[in-house]
Amino acid sequence: MTNNIWRYLSIILPILLFGALASLFLERPGLQTDEILFANLSLGEINHTTYIARKIGGITFFVISYIGALKSWIFIPIFKFFGFNYFSVRIPMILLSMISLLLVYKAVNISFKKPLLAWFILMALVTESTFITMVRTDVGPIAIEYFCKILSILLIFKYLQSKKQSNLYFLPLVLALGIFNKINFIWFSNALLFSSLILVFLLETKKEKLTFAKFLGLTFLFEFILFIGFNKLNPGMVSSSNIGIDLEFIKTKIQLFYYFGKGIFDGTGFYRIQYLISEETFGYNSLSKGIYQTFFYLFEVCLTVFIIYTLLVIRKIWKKQNDNGDIYYLFFVCIILCISAQIFVVENARNLWHFYTLFPFFTICVFYGVYNLLGTKISWLFFVVVIIYNLNNFSTYVYALTNKTPNPFWSNKINELAEYVKPVKGEFVELDWGISTQLLCITKQDKFKRGFLTQKGELMAYLDNPEEVFYRDYLENKELQNLYFISFQSKLADPKMNIIFDKMIDKKGYQKVLVKNFYENDKTLIYSIFRLKKG
Image (cartoon, rainbow, N blue to C red; front, side, top):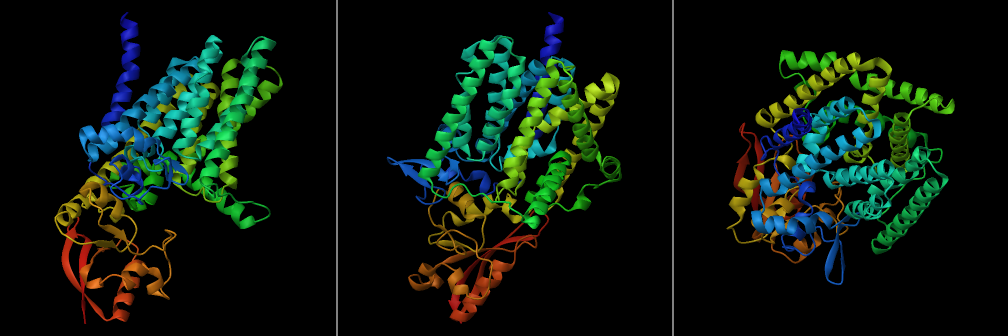
């Protein structure tokens, strides 16, 4: 009885720790456009075009051509009960991720039957700063995807454990929800079904093997039909690249695999790309700098262990000297390789959240490899190193949240801006990408426009013809002096759009009149509101 209580606490307490870490300073960074792209629909379509991509029978099914409305539907009752705020946007995804971590522990424990190893992996994931920060802001989005990935694997493992086919009946539904949530879930779905063929070796009778193989085949057919159906509803939603003999493309993708792999593992990826923290921040004091520099090549060490142990497992299986744990290990390796192959050929798969599809599988494989190669004592040492490394990286994130000026796309001064513009009558034009969606959802008013977008919704990157960059309806059908213009002023923002704006108003004979400036906590100018007058 006492042993069971301690065992449950050893699982529950780390998951609660994750919840506490992910909830620290919940209002920083501020809400970002990609984080709340689902929210306009959840709030009842304040604007009928902002992230409303496809309706069927009057019901919105896609918020972007490749992102379904699943999250939007889930949040309808949440926003009705709690309103739209940092708590209601972020806490549900943190709670879902806590469930996902519990499922990871159960899946690893079932597959390797080593509770200590499963606990090592759980603690490593609980303290992994990239996971904490990504699910907290759900950039990608990744939280629902992560949950569907782990649940689908657990369903298969449960079937292999009990041989009850009822465990498999929910698998097609979970995969369908994952694909509907975001189309690139198809990478994992394909990898899962292909890699599961390896698990056939764990089944004892020919009938069991045939039944499992048939089910995997039917599930693949189902997801293929679903994928084609989604693509028919949203033509062009799948953008891929033929690598051919384009050596530059191949070189770039290899570099991205290393860059994002290391960035995810050591926490720098999310900070550098999404929060724009300088490399020097990973050493904000002498202790932090010492830890960061000492373990700088930990990812490379883990990658080496992963490669060596994978080759050893293949050799063991070839000589029929393997145990069931090795079969499960190879299953996770195959998922990594299959997903990697698909990421490699998809031209637009160049962001951190695309490569995060490979996790937590890499972490699982590395810990299993260390455990079996080097034994329990060295595994404890490796575990302690990883935890120290992870917590140091997370402390950098906390330091940055409380002391550094963020990229303006992530500033929580967006709330102050929203409160100011809410009672003001008139239309507001955003002179860059990244704030109109937040203003729309916070104020629940449809008066915010994106000025520097073409009709196709692509950001313009040239200065030759500012009239073509700026929406023509504002130039031809609006009195510019009746509009308000919101400009990013932070040194971290791209100055290109402000240059285009200045060039346009100068050509039209206008002058800018400052209405109000907004400052970050350290007094850094971040937003400005302008009006125009004839010069």
